Image (tube, rainbow, N blue to C red):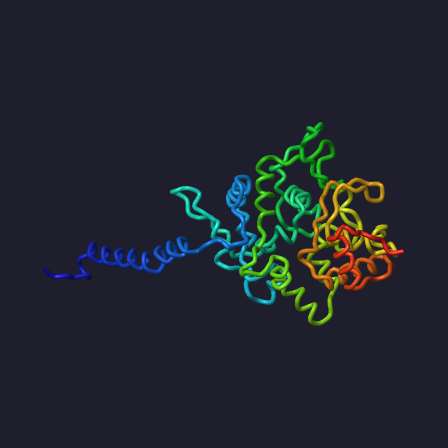
Length: 337
């Protein structure tokens, strides 16, 4: 029997196709299955709740991964996004069903920022809802499309409804903006994106070590403006004026302008919620930054806030921040006289 590949096209096709299948199994399918079976979640990570997993599906179905990555590279330009990604970061992703592969969240395009650690960088659900409904309401230069169709406009929302405080000019003229279940699921998923420590260090020390931009600032000269831009500006805005009805202004704020910095320090360390500020109620929750920022970093960003946008208040030291942190943890909240 002669094998003539020049004349026997079926044989030629069969050999080429068989080679393709064998190579695919050897260099793609089998390694992928091995990685999936042997890649374990990081010890400090938590499994997704049912709502968060629904949000992952909303994320994928709406093509969010086309503009947002979830892969922090070990290079300088990614330093402010978190620590470099590890295989364990993706171990809790599973196939949706037998017919659909594991959701691909790595992405390749950074039209928008990387979301690997967005749950820590922007932990405010209110901000996330506003950003989804109309991105320009929190960032006037944003090019992200509006996902307003994930929300309902109700004239008389129920008392237990989540009402999104959209500023004038960015929302409906009449009625309140209320997120649908789909929006709630998506925001729950986004808030769950928090990088877990990759070793046996505690979360606080790991976060401090992984934030390369902050570590570099500490080695040279702590840059309060850089910390503010990375942690605070998305809510309070770069000009310190905040977002009316959503996030309070820092320019002219009594807590920021006070000669006694204790309250200001406590707010940065432990967050704030449910307090009327300058006669206005704000529904958004101010996140606590005490576990992510060192005493030196807290002092640097507070001093930036106390000396910017027309504020002219006494600056603080890292020692003062440390004292407030210790007093608060011991239940000895005191005010300097």
